Length: 371
Image 1 (cartoon, rainbow, N blue to C red):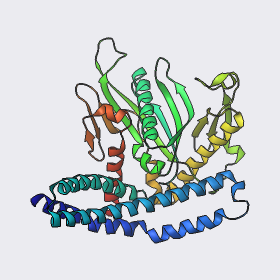
Image 2: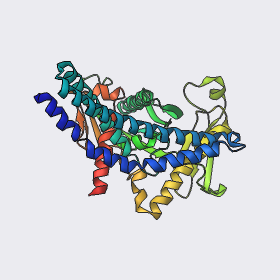
Image 3: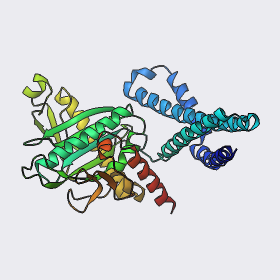
Image 4: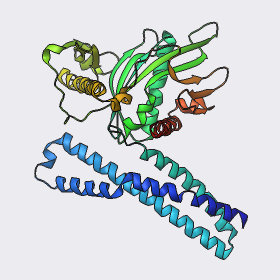
């Protein structure tokens, strides 16, 4: 059967990549790490430190998920080999059709899994803090910022990640001027780091009475949430702490008290702020975590070139500096200027289907490191 011969050749193309993935994952080391963490869980007082125990549980879950996913992929490969042999022996046309369908499904799952193995950076497994600032375009840019915020909210929801709003300032007429949020989940930063940069929107503006096309921008900054075990000293004299009333919805308590916190690191000019928590103390703690993450990365960038890709280069929030363009008129298209990845279904992307662009970025980065 011609189709069966083609399926056999197609399946064998995955044998070497499967072996390469297994070697890169170092399954044996992951199993030893799980055993070490399981032993730590049995120690008295393990659950007394909720944050530390939570981090360990998240690491265990991530390691087990990786091993289970690889074992499932390997088993699927073997099952397909068996099905092809059975189809050859029996000459069963229905089995041939089923084999083709399963091979197509296997190809998609394997490619998704291989992409995940590229998430091997120092902070790729961490949670991520994302900040979106409206750029050139006035009210249109603020509306665009709200659209991008929704895009990442939908993406996080689809992946089962938790999104926590940290700070939000509404636009003067519509949309969002700036928003900061945390995405919590295994490899959240590894995926979201691809989004760091300026995003450009081209469409007929709903805020323009003449119905003219408008170009607007927003800047997305992505940082990993750094483990508190990493010590970063911040002198009291180096920071200025300002309090202000939280804006937007949040209940009477938030709106009537100056619970929101803004921290300025004077030596570097770094500014972080948080207004999501109910108390000033909680907002201060969250803002300090964000500041320490930025200072840690800044220090690493100064000391080692390997960290230069964590925060990325500084960028202008306007023309000529965008990493991705979203066209809604006169045609629909989303295209990444770094990877050349593109799709004509712009509205699907804006509804959270950002994975093709994230995956293309990971492959592009891996190719750059190998060359």
